[in-house]
Image 1 (cartoon, rainbow, N blue to C red):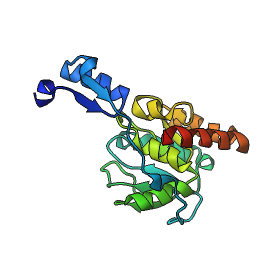
Image 2 (tube, rainbow, N blue to C red; image 1 turned 90 degrees about the vertical axis):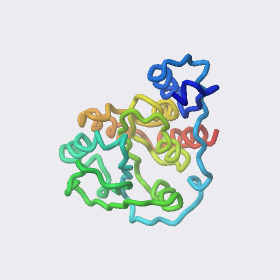
Image 3 (cartoon, one colour; image 1 turned 135 degrees about the vertical axis):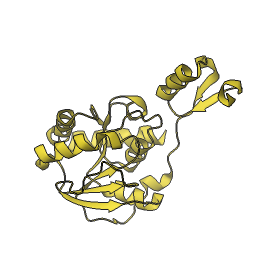
Image 4 (cartoon, rainbow, N blue to C red; image 1 turned 60 degrees about the vertical axis):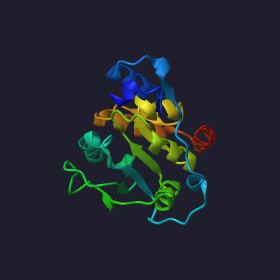
Length: 202
């Protein structure tokens, strides 16, 4: 009721704008989009807090539905993943005891630690369902980290052509997206990451 009675609603992506419009029965002209800002901390040179090589997986309400698909992808094609997965965020009821690879678990992570983890990660794995903000993707792009994420919602909106995209609850799709990183040359990778840093900076 408060949102409907307000002069306007501000949200963090066009995907969220459409969702708000539908759920609140408001016209799009009353819902404004402001892209999230990313701290300069994420492009600073910071010493590593975990031993590379590793992939970073943020555990949150958007990625929890995808845990079983990610675990299945790890079991099917472990060679496509770095030898360690760093899982950041509160524990989830469906979280496996054994990820099938070396795993480091961090439940609380200040921005400086997260920035360090991103700066030294081989990859951010962010198969998210209904993320209306896309902040994890923006932070990774600013840090110059390759990103695997969902092809819908804010992650795709703010990621543009830079990330590798997957269907987040499909292990085969996750595997196919990971192959993109294996198949690219070092110059293609650097060009993509440079583009990502620029778009996140804007």
